[in-house]
Amino acid sequence: MRAILLAAASPLVFTAGVQAQSATEALRDVITITGTKRPGGVDVQEVPIAVTAYSADQLEALQYRDISSLSYQMPNVQLEDIGTSPGIANFSIRGLGINSSIPAIDPTVGYFVDGIYYGLNAGIVVDNFDLEAIEVLRGPQGVLFGRNVTGGAVVLRTTTPTDEFRFNGRIGVETGLRYVASAVVSGPLTDILSAKLAVYRSDDDGWHTNQFDGSSHGANEVTIIRPALALRPNDNLEFILRLERGKTDGDGPSGQNHVNGLGIGGLFPRGSFGMSIDEPGFARADWNQAIFETNIGVDFGNGTITNILGWRDYEGRSLADIDATPAFLFHAPSSLDQTQWSNELRYAGTFGKGLSQMFSFVNRV
Image 1 (cartoon, one colour):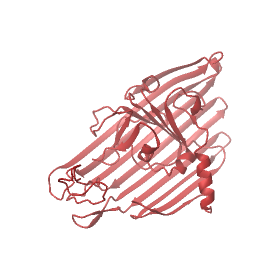
Image 2: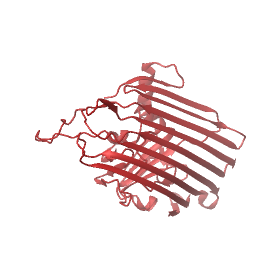
Image 3: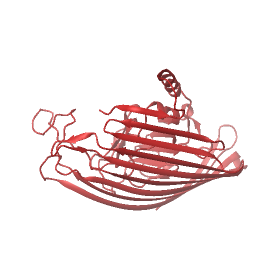
Image 4: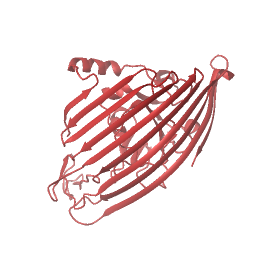
């Protein structure tokens, strides 16, 4: 098991007692969610659906690293990767899920970042940071999110450029060795224009030992850069441009050939960390994305017209030792190139006491 040797955050001076107290307070925060697509969001306690949500402070208190680290924090939810290729999601909610890395198989749990749907399971379970909130909606969500959400939807929101200067930095070292550093700086450029730059870097030497040749295994490098601009000419008009550039490069999955439940066969008992593979494999991914969001406040129903235009380009290459033995039995290469466009136009407003309406038009290519 990994151990954190050093972690630091801005401000760089703090005590363990203060950390424990702030973590407890964070887990009691009132959370506003946007998964219902209502203007300004709503209190999670007032939503008539099964939803679990975490604010940025709560994610920090839970020592969030990637989406799979929340699997044991929510009922009836599993947010794991596929195992045969790093970064590919194998999500299931209330027993509805798929167990395949084949792109042609539609998922049952939709994954949304800043309003755009990820059309592939690949490139999802990667290190993440710079988050404003995570929402997991359980049960069919087709009315709000369209297809591929029969099990539910996972909704992530990155931070938005702020009107006041803010800076958050973090560094960490874990056994392995693994080095992690991230920084987010946000603030105004003019009276109506704000900007943000978020940068993340992780360098993992690999924690496992491959008994086939005594080498370290599990090495991985992750780099993510997120610039953003927000233009707010007046109180009723907002334009937000979010960009992201990401890259990962590392070994293939650290597979283990298990002894079965009767203690027969296999190389290593379950619960151990032993592994011996003749093919270390590799996993590389490269992606770019852009999201342009427009929000217009209108008098009609005191509502908001929102348009979210999204583009994402993803390339992935991997090689895995599926049999997880020192013999050449089953090695699986894979290659994936994907480009997607999507646009969502919606209106949400309130007419009279307690009567709200929302109209949404979504197009994905």
